[in-house]
Image (cartoon, rainbow over all chains, first blue to last red; front, side, top):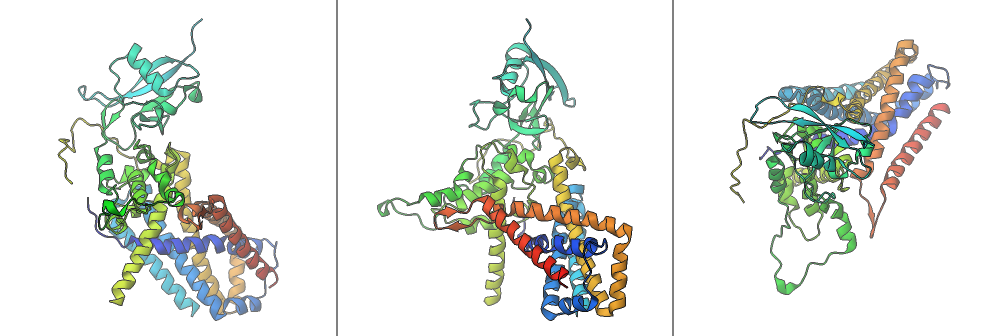
Length: 115
Length: 247
Length: 138
């Protein structure tokens, strides 16, 4: 009953980091930007102010971290949901490539856009 | 005055008949102090002697009488009939295990998994008697005490969907048992067990559904044990990566 | 440590039940579990939104206004309400599970589960408050 040593520990670490960061930051950010502002509950900050804060190098670094780890959180969780939820175990390798590959691609796109 | 009764639907499987399992109904007295196990014993003693099932202590310490009652894995010696009234109560063999006959499941896979995690104190070098006893503070004991309470009832394996989908998965009880020894200050076998369990059939298949801990009648919390094991496993993986680069 | 048990691992007369593809609709707990796992899609969606926001910011005020306009569309509001619901479910289930992973000892005393979870919730509240204050105060 010996299975090959897996690198799942690596993906799980990213999943955990992404899960924690997204749990802390996403609800407030989502609410403010996509609901409170369009629905008029909150005055939208001016473009200049938003740009000043968000384009600051430190903010950009943090944003890249949040975006990338969010993608990896999704990748690991979604991969297992496809295995167990839909029993797609025979597509194992393909699913892993699509999920983790997607997360890597997303992170590269984010890095490109942020710089 | 007729005594109040309740219907028990039991999933019968008789291999000599070869047919598919079929639900059979029995009427048993609905008594306030009766559990499902009492009902099964009543059926076997007075209604249908062909019914097969396992039981022993009838008080929740032997782990023999685990079955599915209305779709949930429970110890039948702890499931009161009145809780399910007016019924009917559906009794089926434990999920995720092959059925040998009626309510009796084949448990060899479970036993193998338990053996696989090396459930004994591993020492790099045996401590000679002259050096005296191992000392363990109450605080050190409390770290792993919950994981010693497992009665091997297999309810957690029935509750775990991952085990149902991947029979190769080591499973909640076995992993909690591994942690019982990993966290024991007398044991030095963490690395050995990590080798065995930090893979696709060990801790990394667990998706933290959490139903194992819900089903456990002894409060072992295998889900918690596995979560801590994942943290340890991840730390171990990163450490070995850095040490490899350092060489 | 091989012991000869005499068992045959596969017996033709044992009955095995296959797990159906939609095993998880059978119990509410399992449905809740699958929804919890699917909240990760909302998180990935948020990450994509952030990328789009940054792209708009870099392009200039018109692009930024256009993006904010897009978000006002009723369909987007509905989608984002669902996304927020998912994100909240993710946060709550995540923090509720935090005591399982974090075992903190101070000397002989183990910090109780409710304090670990409480600490996480407090952190979440604090961070959300800071973000909200920064947003509202411009």
